Length: 355
Image (tube, rainbow, N blue to C red; front, side, top):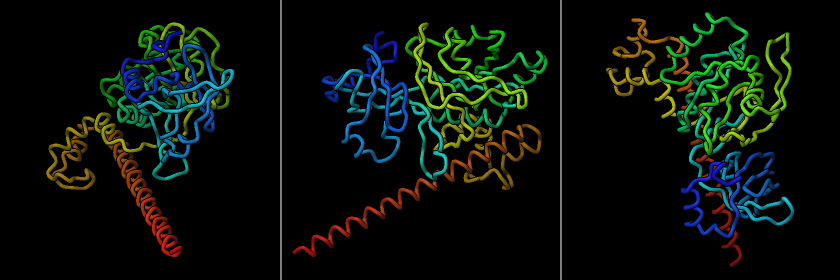
């Protein structure tokens, strides 16, 4: 294997030279668990950990390596390595960290395309699709919708579902597949190219691990049986993992996510809800909230049935979520700044008392 097969580019090599990192080897993070990593390069896989300086100078979780990152390493034992530097990321897919305010959790780094996977049975949710698409658009990652388990519904039901998605989410590739019958898998494979990185986004039990096995032609991922009582597969992926396909392309599998909170996704919202933003240009007031103002072009479109009401409601929900995250982030920065001032003041008093 060569580094290019893992997605290494001339731009990364140029950065490596500029930062004088050529004394180190280059590797890509393929798994991460509690700040312990497995990294991969042309010579093999290594268990890796951060050097102390990299650990202690990190200001938040985003400074630590994530699955998909490129890192500079030094080998110190058989299949052991130290991580000295994290290369700049071309893209980051992230969500709000669960249970905290104003913090982000990186789902995957350096992604070219995200396959948004939803099953056509009980998992299907249009609002969640728009949420995932917004996250991808904010991350400058190309989203492709993959509908699984199409063998469970009729052709008429599938056609209706595809039309509903196209009416609400414009200009996206939608690939219906069945892991059971293999229908649509060749179409999906045609979108996977050597040296490009893909990730799978979706809830538990939608068939992401089975899909990876189908794409690779091997049993690379553990899969769970479908429960007859809830008509969905079991949650089997417990951590993020980067997989290199023999046919070319790199896929990152992710654990199923019940919560996918958006962060600072202004550009993502504008791309996902392009029709709403275009209408807003004709609003009477520049600071229109699109909720109650007279002369709001969006409200007029709703009243005249020229705008999907469900899409509008979901837009408002995501906009409020984005605003709340931004305010929480500002509060966190303000508290950190105040704490810094308090520490400096205490240090100053201590120095004065020593004279």
